[in-house]
Figure: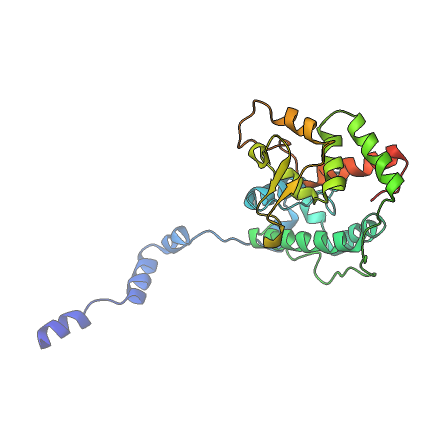
Length: 260
C-alpha cells in the first residue's frame, strides 16, 4: 500500500501539467482558451451591426416567446448602428413613446427593451444597458372607454360590411367580449356546433377557459371561414393580437365612433 501511495503522489498535478505545457509551447494555452463572450469597449465601437440586425438576432433567440420590440425600437431606428444605442438615445426614444401610447404599453416596452439590451451586453455587442435607470412616469389608465349602444351598432355594421376577416375579428372582440389574443390564438376546430359555439382554451387565466355562444350575426361568417379547412389550422392565419387591435381602431374611425 505504501508503494502504491508513493506512486500516486509522484503523478504530476493538473497545475504542474499546465505549467509544463506552457513552458514547452507558450501559445498552446492561448489556442486552448475558450472564446470570450464579451468584447472590449474598442471592439464595441467597431461593431458595424445595425439595431435591426441585433433585434432580429434577439428575436431568433426568443422565437418561442414572441417578444416584440417594434414599438420602442421602431423601423426608423433599426438602421442605426447598434453602438449608437446610447443612454441619450434611449431617453429620447422613451420620451417620444410617452406621447404615443398608454402608460401600461410604455412599461411593457421598456421592460422588453431592457431585456434585449442586457442580452446584447452578454453577447459583447453593447458595453452597458442604455435603458438602465429609465422609468415610465404618469398615471396608469383605470379602464378603457366603452362604446354606447348606438355607437356599437354602427361599429359592428361598419366592420361586417367589409366582408373579410379583419372586420369579423373586430366584431367578435366587441360582441363576444374577447381579448385580441383569444381571437388570434383560435384554430378551426374551436368553431363548433355549426358555428354556434366558440371554444376558448389556454386563455390568459384558467377562468378564461370557456365555451362561448356565437352571436347569430357572426355564425354564417364563421361557418364560411372554416369550411373545408384543416381542423388544426389557425382560424385567422398568421396574425397576432396587434393585427386585431389595429383594425379595431381603424374601424372605429371609419364608423365615426370613439376609438377604443
